[in-house]
Length: 348
Image 1 (cartoon, helix red, strand yellow):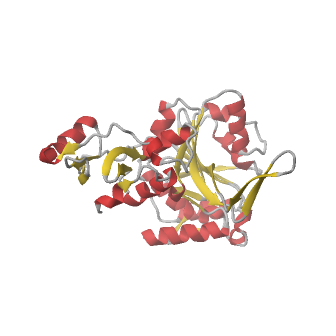
Image 2 (cartoon, one colour):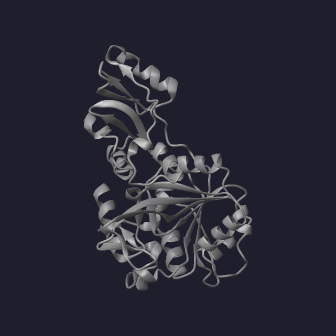
Image 3 (cartoon, rainbow, N blue to C red):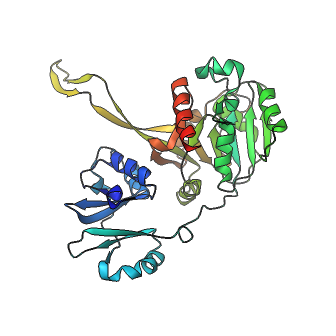
């Protein structure tokens, strides 16, 4: 990659900076004005900024770290030493005018490796998948193929990359199809099936897990893929001492119409042509503590979001881990399914 792939100007919107970070795949951009270094913005910097109610349309300089570590050209040979000392994965080399001449990155063996997580994973797979009719009238949603694997296999394999090895799948609709596929299919995935006797919703089904997990666990919908560092998500959850952490995507959409703000008197106040709005949406990936399951009523249809709201109302710690929209793939509807298939097929 070239240096320009890591540079943004101070008034670059936060959302665009996130996209640039995704494109360069190094977790960082350097904020430069007229070529001169002003600061850095990592995915972590942006996440913290958003959690403090920063907006996606704000200039990235508001989220940037002004205390950027750097080296002059004549001290380039100290790059490895400095990265190790400050536990950073890159360091810019500057000329006398503070212009970036080169960016040194830590070797793959030196950079932080994926943490091995000894954390169980529950997959909610009991629903009918009505938004995916007619596909799910034939196949249950967990068995919808994406490339040469089912969506569930993609989800599980991503968790396995982080060392997760215990999987519980809550099943109901076409459960025998699902069980037969994984029990008969030649794969190394070890799954325990938890069977609903009636449809309990995304929250009610989790009650069946009560007593199975002595400590923190992941919960995932069966129709999403999250391309994030699960070790970082778990670390955030524990550092924040959350009962629940919701992984949420930052979205920005354009309203395809001109909008009008109106005064109480009925007179126009302001017009905007095709404005963009930003919001945070729930992706369907969670980190939970066992106490969360105690908040779910027995044998009752309830959504997980209703249980989370109950916890919020009780004053429990409910955290949000924001990610870029590009790192969230959702196949909950047919057009989204086609997008997920297209994205994953490019990676194969």
